[in-house]
Image 1: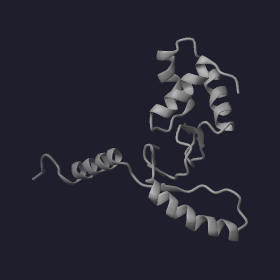
Image 2 (image 1 turned 90 degrees about the vertical axis):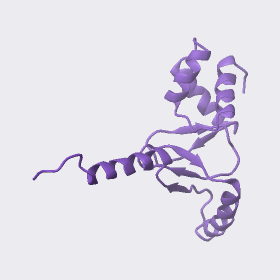
Image 3 (image 1 turned 120 degrees about the vertical axis):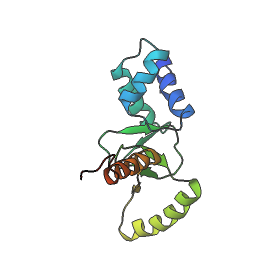
Length: 142
């Protein structure tokens, strides 16, 4: 894999941010730092870096592919409302992987992906506020 300023910028951004970016999100961030970078360059470099194990392609059930700098074994929690991905703590992932390895062997699976669904704090707060507004009317009719 050859070195390029664009590839290095993509890799660095994924490694310094503990986030799960789409190519479009990464493009929005990187074009401020590397103005000559194109969206096509972002896509090419993401695929190349994932192929060489430098980053991880997140196989989420969400619509868009996401990429992250954390290549260690871990699973995700996805908010069904906004699609935000959060890493599960490593000790939970290790315990789950031990269980899943046994089940995968029984089913003759070579790879597996596990994703949990749970509302993020922000969406949970919004839904709670909506529920409160619906229950309490600012005026009443007589």
